[in-house]
Image (cartoon, rainbow, N blue to C red; front, side, top):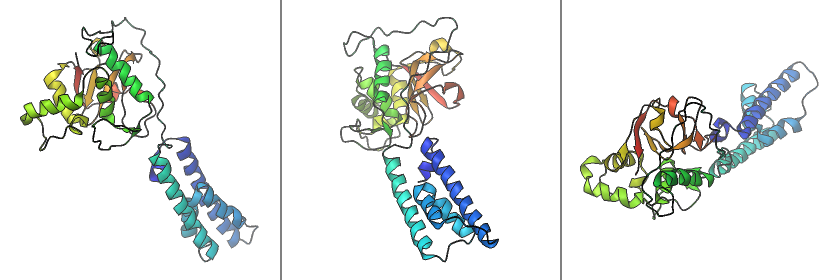
Length: 289
């Protein structure tokens, strides 16, 4: 239920509003009772608990010492709370709370044209270069609307609707001809002193941000982390933050800084966002081929 109330969605706005209204109704009815005025119907007071205001109703009962002696309120309001706690868990689990949008932002940069970088390598042999493939496949991944949740998979790669930030990169590279599950495991075993891994597990090691940063430092081209050097940031590059990772977009904001294709949490508004300039924890910028 806490996830429902803290998520910035229409459902959360509704729940906050209805609980505030419920609390006010109980306080108002208590005041009317004390002044012998026409009362709010009990059906309304109980009904608002069942349409989402259960917590506000319960708080009103306690704070205003109202209806606490009436058995129907002592039974039905807690039942409403249980129902909404159960429903809240169900909605959060199914990601109804925070449906991240797959809409692509507009390219707002109108300055000097930046020539897109194209790799000379086509590892998967599909006729397009790796840089283009990585960008394209990152967008394909987020179009599937993955739900942010960490799970362990015997095959390494998620085979359901769940995933985390590293899966955007893992999917994009695998579809472009780079199987990070195998490649990272091989590098860990060859350079174990560089990794903080006690017992290698190829099914999960490549899905950890720290391990990916070390792997890319060993195998990819390291580029600037200065976001103002806009020509050096190209669609299909990989950006690594302290505890996060994403793929650089081919679209840019008005200042020419590119957007990031990423999966940060269950409640982000879009998978492709203008976040580079606001982040102070960029620790790596890599180009695969």
